[in-house]
Image (cartoon, rainbow, N blue to C red; front, side, top):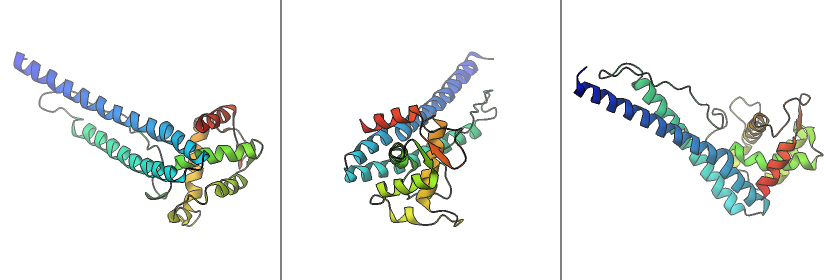
Length: 206
């Protein structure tokens, strides 16, 4: 290999590595925004009744979620584009596909994001004694958020089996179970807050 070819390959590998790292850093930061920073701010605003700020943060979560999907798609396209030997460089920049922070599909782009329901679900469970049937939890959550829901939140999903805000609230519950905020071993149909969930509730209220 000539010195020129060596430097060309080294530069190519450096560019590939830097682009990949940059895209991963963007995804990681956006996930922190969506799963921690923005929900915490939203919870604080909802707790003090500042619904104007709640609406602004909700819109920001929607926009940031959309940008995350763009970043994920860009990284995937980059991986596919340079997954084979190109210009003499032998590298395979493959990384596993990251799941979106909020499952896509029936939810729709203009509904209130799943993260919005984090605080009211935790509050409802504490008010209900720590555990309760999911239906009862959702009834109390609705009383808390009904004045903040969008018209699209009350529409049925395409399958007709549920309404959009129910679907999103259930996705939020699923995510909190993964995080250990809700119990994963509760009887079927029962939602139960954990000690970590109570700590998260206090954190969101601060």
